Length: 338
Picture 1 (tube, rainbow, N blue to C red):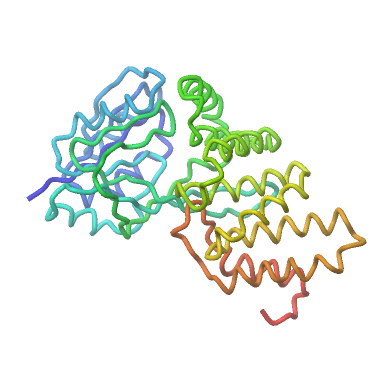
Picture 2: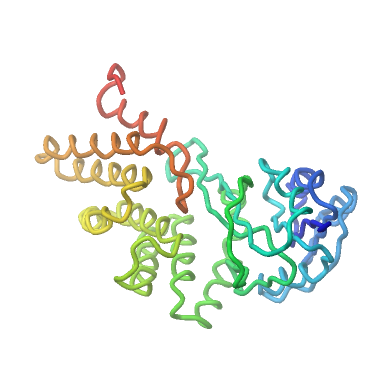
């Protein structure tokens, strides 16, 4: 029978580490926490929950820390979580790994809570990330590190909730992430994924023109042959449209949407953001609003026709249902049947 371990790196996570450990503890055989220099009571809280706590000197490299944590595990399978995450659904599938040989990497649905610019309500977006790792798999990357393996990847019906992108948490780690990103890009200037992550960092801090420049560089590095690959390209396109819209470059956003539309017939998120872009265009060109408003309606109705598609990277829950319906009611009037 295989063993399953929770493996985590942490630093100053007293706010949330207990809930994370408690969410995973029923489904794993051991919990390993590698502390990278906490000044709060993270260590004591983790030990009180039954975790093995070890210590690591931070070297400005997330992959180095993750690999050091994995090296402490004697398990056949390792579930990798961060302290600001919760294993919400699918724990029984993690436990069932005890009866499976460690011959694939498991991707799970990490749902990150966020607040859109100017919006009071919390939303959440999906990222399918390889977090169930067989023994021997290691990470690469100073920041936004990724496990590297030739093993096949399999999507698991496992949901992890993440609140690290909420404003208070991002403010605390923004400067650190930016410095690590810049160091990583100096080492790998042709890495499109790092440019995409730099754009996200700018976007989170409302630097929308800088965000678009980074996204544009990522698109150029991916090349014109890219359509739906890599999987994060879907989120890159959505964020590019939003950054262009937020920085007042609406016509360029329309051009990008026109170029990309054929790639995303199954994406309610694409049509949701397109409707937002068209709404800005109608506001900027009131003399053309009569022609543009039906296009906005069609975009948001297309969201409902497609329905939810959380398998797409960056999919925001509700854009294929209640969020699109809400926008249509505002556009058409509250008495409209949608």
